[in-house]
Length: 115
Figure 1 (tube, rainbow, N blue to C red):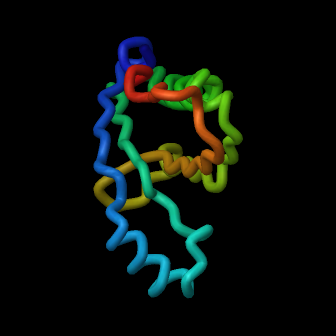
Figure 2: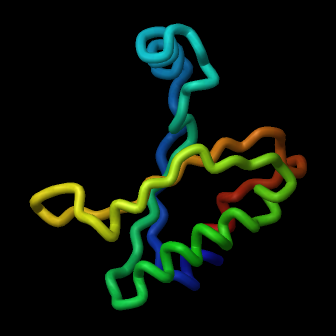
């Protein structure tokens, strides 16, 4: 599992509610639902080490090769490496990765077990 191999803690969020998605689509995107993001999301927390940056990039590469995703059409729509440059005076660092997944994986399969 990725979590064990890369010393990751996965914090999974609930799927964005229909009400929240509809409101955001109307107000922010003028009714264009194709612009909606973060419908399903998770935060991956990595153990701080000298190899943390390499672990982050390696885990992203492995995630994109997971069978659940290779059976679907995936597209990276946004990537921002804010780890190598802090985005706050407090030193907060992260990476932002948005992936669009089109199509479904095999029936009943889930990426839940991969974490």
